[in-house]
Length: 99
Image 1 (cartoon, helix red, strand yellow):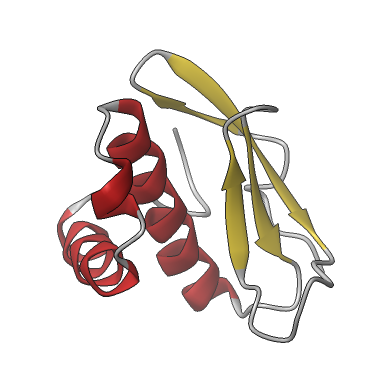
Image 2 (image 1 turned 180 degrees about the vertical axis):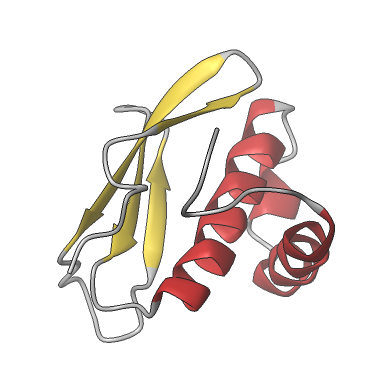
């Protein structure tokens, strides 16, 4: 089941990233990924909606860190996960509802 977020875009420092909810088969742990070359954020269609929002934030944090030249910090999954969890609790990014 694909959620309303599929096909929407999110602006990360001036670059519009298209969000694609789809089957991700790289490995069993692949919940999502960001691709700077295609300006796409892919989210695994098998994720529960509540987890999909958290994974989206995780990928957005990677995108922001890479965009500001902090690729080493972007490789630190522990840091990325902690920051994305914090942002997810304070921001108003919702999968459903109005703009």
